[in-house]
Structures are given as structure tokens and as C-alpha cells.
Image (tube, rainbow, N blue to C red):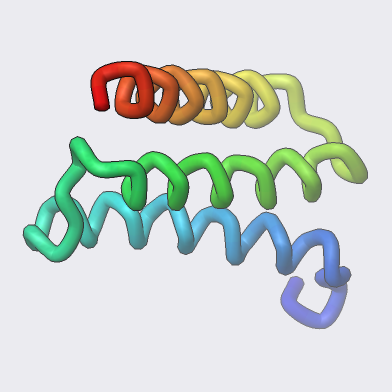
Amino acid sequence: MLAEMTLIDWLGVVGSFVIAGAYLAVSRGWVDGRLPAFNLMNLGGAGLILWSLYYRPNAGAILIEVLWVAIALLALFNYVRNR
């Protein structure tokens, strides 16, 4: 399986690690979930996964990543608006 992975596949893997890393960082107290860093990490990770899904589409995965992007953008918008 690893030998068959392309650069695009690896981008999706990196995106998954970025999202998981964001949750790890919040759960360990390394990052405040109310600050932009957490949502920027989620946005970036979801973007990488969506990029890989463009080349290997999967409807369920695309939907969840679009939701991640929407949630992150909404949180960032609210952060900026409330400052």
C-alpha cells in the first residue's frame, strides 16, 4: 500500500495528521481552542485532505472535510468579529 501512494495521497495523510495534531494540542493544553491557531490547523488539514480527494473522490470524506472547512472558517470569522 505505501509503495502505491502518490504525492497527492501523502498530502491527504499529512492533512489527517495536522487535524489530529490540532486536537492533541488542544487536549494537552498546548493550544487554546478559542484562538485562531487551532482553527487554522483544522482549515489547513482539511484543505490538504480535500486536495487529495480531488484526485481520488469519496463523497463521505469530501462532505466531512467541507464541514471542517466551514466550521473553521466560521470560528475564524467569529474570532475576528469579536476582537
